[in-house]
Amino acid sequence: MPFEMPSEFTKEVATSTAKVYKSKLNKLAAAGYDTVEKLQQEPKKVIETIQQITGSGNDEVSRHARRYFLSAIFWATPLPAQNTYYTYWQKCIPLKTDDGDKWVKRSNFHEKN
Image 1 (cartoon, rainbow, N blue to C red):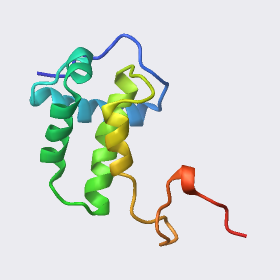
Image 2: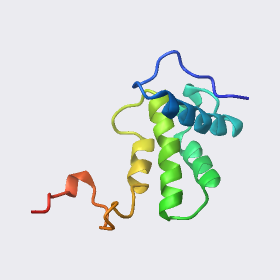
Image 3: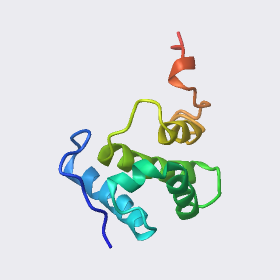
Image 4: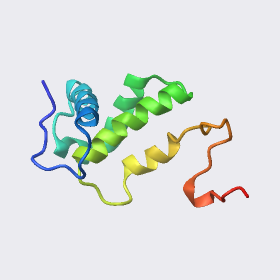
């Protein structure tokens, strides 16, 4: 059963991005979270499902896959600024930058001179 897409989304994205997000939402729908309301009502269970789908690893590949699921949820679901999904997003940030430096949260980032 496919995800029941909302009539309006929280932001506009490219068509190719929308296709990726829809595929992630459809995977969640297959696990029983097929509406925006279900995503809003059971974030902890949805996060457990995302972890099952993406594996238990804590490497870059797993973290990247989890961020795709979370981005799809943020796209389809209006949520308050502070929410369970956002907190989980903070646990899925990259480990390193493209330059190989350790990733630093925006709140702790200081430009190198």
